[in-house]
Amino acid sequence: MEFLNVQAGPFLFKAKLELVAAPKTCARFCDLLPFTNKVIHSRWSGEAVWVPLGDFEMNLDFENHTVHPSRGDILLYPGGFSETEILFAYGSSSFASKMGDLAGNHFLTVVEGQENLAEFGRLVLWEGAQDIVFSAA
Image (cartoon, rainbow, N blue to C red; front, side, top):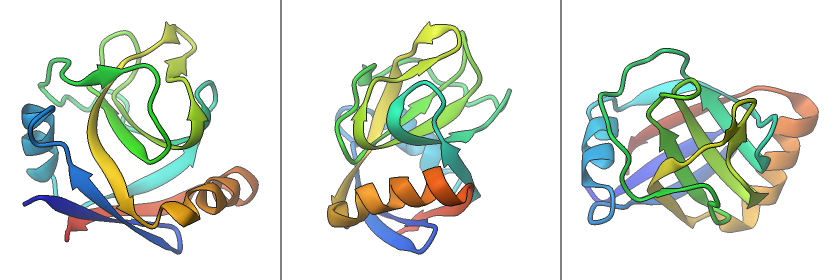
């Protein structure tokens, strides 16, 4: 599997799995497919939305991790200093929590639908939580 579909609210994005840079994170996340949850607007990370996963144990270490995701990057924070979460950057973002900066594993990159990223972010900001579903493309 090389790509995932990400149905986020009314928007459909196609994302490339970063299989070379984050093979363990990609494999672990693919084991969870289809993955359905809610996405809410970030509190500390700028133009990003996130899926809080609480104490969900991913059994992952850091790989291909970054504090500064680019527009369309999707990160998985495997837990530690803060709760486990998925961060989806739709614009300028610096990944953080109430504990300070966080580095998340960059494991997905949006390759189709980028023109809808800002509108998706605004929807979550102004209309609240949206459904998000990650599935095989």
